[in-house]
Length: 369
Image 1 (cartoon, rainbow, N blue to C red):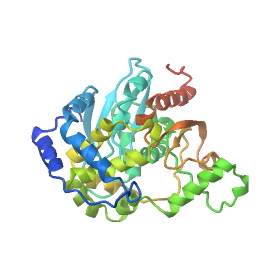
Image 2: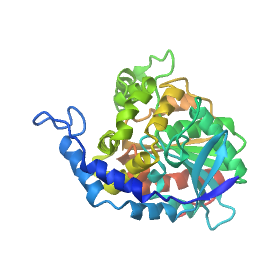
Image 3: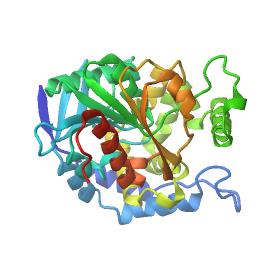
Image 4: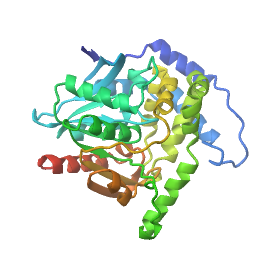
């Protein structure tokens, strides 16, 4: 059964949040530490004060509620999603999948332009936001992809596209492998490309690709701290993050700063809305479990669906096309000189245009301007 849903956070929860922010116990900081030890104290205090005194959750709650939202139970788990239909009844359905530390908030700035060409389905990953928390083991990205296939079936969509970044990349590619007869194509704005097994062909790579390879190898050797924590002790770190909104804010805001292009910084209120979703739904622990359940690495899954790749210059790592083409049927490849890991938030115009261009190629329909 699919049920209509509206975001309605109790005022008591907002009052509790404001009270906790006002009573934050701040850590010390080394003089002139900058970003060397993590997100600076002054930045977190500034964000926390804005969150407590100026930011209006009700305004952003109303923005979410402008779009039709629903919930349904799939495989024993509540799944929340936005469903924005195109005026063209024959438009291609498109499922958009967020990542961590993102949420459906990542797509708010592209819903209008993309809905001119697509029927949009924007789910919250199980364990995240209004799809959380999860209640049992086993919710890895393969299971999420199977849930998406079932969700699209329930909505009556027999042929559709998939788009994602971060976790959304892995989920979308797996969806293409799970439902190849339904998925017409997969568009991603983040694509890890580790060297293929046994590969030793540095001499065949261009200088820019060698620089990309060096960054890829660096991250393979030194995982992000949150990945190590979430892969080993997701429950332990969640006690602190679930109890302190200032802690939750620092943990997420750091990523929105470091992983974005400084020239297209994510707006402060978008960051706070995203952080608030984790806080108000108490899904810090369940969202963290996705790494533990899915594992840090593994062989790329097969995907027979055509794949389009949008590369944004300031992403965490940049993919190497020759590596990607060894694994996936790459049909479309775009390189942009601005934008970072949160492309739909940072450069929504570039993001939406590339999604339209890729699926326009596959369907033969002209790209909407």
